[in-house]
Amino acid sequence: MKKFLTIGQFAKILNVTTKTLRYYEKKKLLIPAYKDPITGYRYYDEHHIKKGYIIRLLKSMEVPLKKMKNINSHWDLLDQLIETSKKLEDRIKEKEELIDKIKQQINNFSEIPQLTSQFDIKLIRLPYQKFECLNFEPSDSFDFFQLYTEGVKLSKKTQDVESQIYVLSELPNLPNLEYLCYAVIQEISESQESENSYFREEGLYLSLIYRGSPTTHHDIGMKKIKKYSKEHGLEFENIMFGRSISDFYIINSPNDYLNEILIKVKED
Image 1 (tube, rainbow, N blue to C red):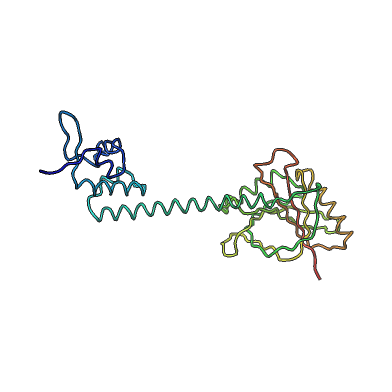
Image 2: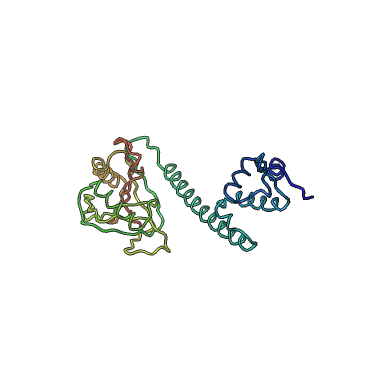
């Protein structure tokens, strides 16, 4: 006489609950070999064990139950595993990209300097850097919100919201450090294609970091640069970069603004 397993015995073999087996029956994945019409007891035979283990394996690999119903052969199983593997690889790639974005934000916050005063000025050396450039009508005033809008346009153009954006200005009257803002530029890799490239030269730069809104503090910063250059006998190239160090979305008050002005220093 053929030996049957009760639903409890079968559940122990598969290490699942009887509730799970009833659910598999409802979904027509694992139909009992026999169901007592009087008591309603379910009975399984030995061939169910293999199928039960396959279902449990596929479930652990996040294969949907509805997909399992179509697996009737070795080749069906192979195709399903390949499809599941590809989906998991795509999910892993998405998670890795998310981790990279989080790490970039961690770096951005970690690099925000702690100023002991409202203005911090020093000489630094910067490497060569390639940028994507977006020109606009030149202006001799620092309209922060207009420049922010131009920066958003540039981010959409490059499809990159993570890399650093600068305001590019020329200095037509170097002795007085008068400036004309005429473009926003965004850092890109050397290999990245660009519609309108700009290249920042390697060299010595004067850096002034200030706390406060650019609308009210940028020109004050320029006066401090002028004074510093006279005291230290510095001469400048006719190009200036400006950037916001603090992210716009964390700004709640004027003191949350943290900005930098960079001017290339002439070297012998």
